[in-house]
Each structure stands twice: as structure tokens, then as C-alpha cells.
Amino acid sequence: MEEDAGKNIHESASGAKGDYSFVDLNRAGIPLMEIVSEPDIRSPKEAVEYMKKLRAILLCLGVCDGNMEQGSLRCDANVSIRPVGQKELGTRAEVKNINSFKFVEKALEYEIKRQQKVKDVEPQLAGSTASTRLWDAVTGTTQSMRSKEEAHDYRYFPEPDLVPITVEQKQIDEIKASLPELPDVKRKRFVSEYGLPEYDADLLTSEKAVADWYEKAVKAGGQPKAVSNWIMVELMKLLNEENKSIEDCPLKPEQLAGMLKLIDNGTISGKIAKTVFEDMYRSGKNADTVVSEKGLLQISDEEAIEKVIDEILAKNRKEIERYKAGEEKLFGFFVGQAMKATKGKANPQMLNDILKRKLQ
Image (cartoon, rainbow, N blue to C red):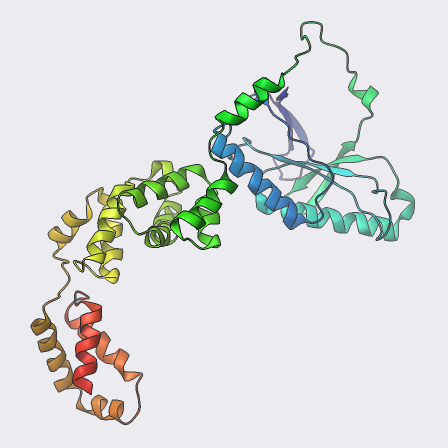
């Protein structure tokens, strides 16, 4: 546990760094929790996966909003290399305050290559003093900030007003018992309880709010896999366009479940549902209201669909001959013409069945 001490900003009016330095104390005194791992991470991709897993846990516990760009979560990465077969790690460099998963990976990739080059080209520098570096996202490089201080350089001394605290095992056990369902447990449950693929479960449980939204929609009557598909594709697309989180979503889980029921009972087609869904998102209206107001009811009257197909076939005699001669891909052409004629409202299954029968 520590407190934020503020930060230095080095910049200039001309754009070249270093002409001016500023001290930003806006976050000074904000409590921080530093989580330090053992040197067990072997690649930039593994480091990113570790960060993502850690962020998911912190979000689940509600102790952090996980916003890396705003500084709520940052990464200081210690990087060192060693020849294959050597036990001891080389001199490390710490890359400070990396503020996105993408930059964590890029910064580590660059720093590994930089250290390899130093070892190959200037071996006398390979064992030099540990250093602290900054990631420059513009140039895609790490820049030297300062040499790493030894312990005595920090000028530590005991704080007389802070007494030692002993945490008993009983308290630790009580806290563990009070924790919510963590992401890994939730992911496994989504696979076993809802029959979701691992990919879906990973995405849905990466943030607690998304997982909660999903479960509410399923409990409201939505089919688990269908709910997952609509969240991952259509809902996330709309949220990303407006840079919104799911907490700010104008659409309720129960509304998505209601729309899916209309698809299941044949009231609307899957294609029309996309139009309905976006209208629901923009207006906040329920699916049945949107369908009624826009006249989007699916046509499931067999005679009506048959009449449309008869008209399409009557206008396309040559295409019928080609289809019967073996050009089976023309079946899609006839379907498209019928859908166009019904403005996408024809029941797809019924349309396909009638069309096949007519062409035979």
C-alpha cells in the first residue's frame, strides 16, 4: 500500500521533449495498491494476459474501475534477459507507467530487443546499473528516465505513527468467504450451466457488468447462446460506437429477451430483428412496440408467400431453366427476389420450403 506522489511532465511548445518540466500534484495522496509478481512471465503476450486476468479480478471485486488511460490501473514492467541455459537474470530495466494492454506488449517487445542489442553490440554495458525507463508511444521506443536507486538512496526511515498490523488467519478466511464469484469460476459455470463455447464465456466474464447483464437476459427467457451472440456482436458494436460501457446501456436485458422471443415464435425474422434491435437501443422502446409501429411483422401466411414466389418465377423463366440445368446457386437469387418483394418480412424457412417445392 502506498500513496500517489504526483508526476513530472516533460514537454515543450515546439514538440520536442525536455525544454520544460512541470509537476502535476492532482493525484498526490491518492491511495494505491501495488501488486508485485515473481519473475515468472516469459513473453510480452503472457504479460498482457496476466494484466487482463488481474484487471478482471479487480473489476469483479469492485475495488478498481480498471481504466488504464485515466491511470486507475497502470503497469510497471521489469525486463531482463539471459542466455539460454543461464540461471541468473541479467540487469533489469523498469519501464514505468504503461497505460494500455497494447502498449504493455509493444513496450516489452521493444525493450527485449533493445537489451539484446546492448548485450551483442556493447557487452560492457550489459551488466551496468539497473535503470528506469519510460515508454514513448509516439516513437515506439523506451527512453531512459534515471538510473535505479539503491535502497539507501530512497532515504527510508521508520514512521513512528504507523504501528505494525497483524492480520489473523480467521480474518483472512472471513474475507475469502465474503468474496463474490470470481471470473475463472464464473467462466467455467457459464460453459457448464449455459452450454456456451469457451470463447463466449471468456468474453462475457471479462467484466462483471457484462456477465451480470448476460445472466439477467437469460433469466428473462432468452436462449443462452442467442443472448451471447447478440451481446458480443450487435450490442457491443453500438456501445463501442458511442464509447459507452454496458453500465450506460440504454437497453435493458429484459428487452433483449423479449425481442428474442419474437424471433423464436416467428413474429419477426432474424434479419428484421437487427433493425428492431437498433431501434430499441436508440429509442428505449420494447421490441413489440417497435415491430407494431414500423409494421415489421413477419409474413407467415403460406398463401401470401406462395403468391409472391409465383410472381417471381413467372418473371424469371430463363433463370428457372438454368437452375434446372444445374446452376443451383440461382436458388439464392430467387430467395433474394422474394425477400425484396416482401421487404424482408417473409418467413425464411417457409419461403425456402415453398420455393424448393415450386422449382421441383
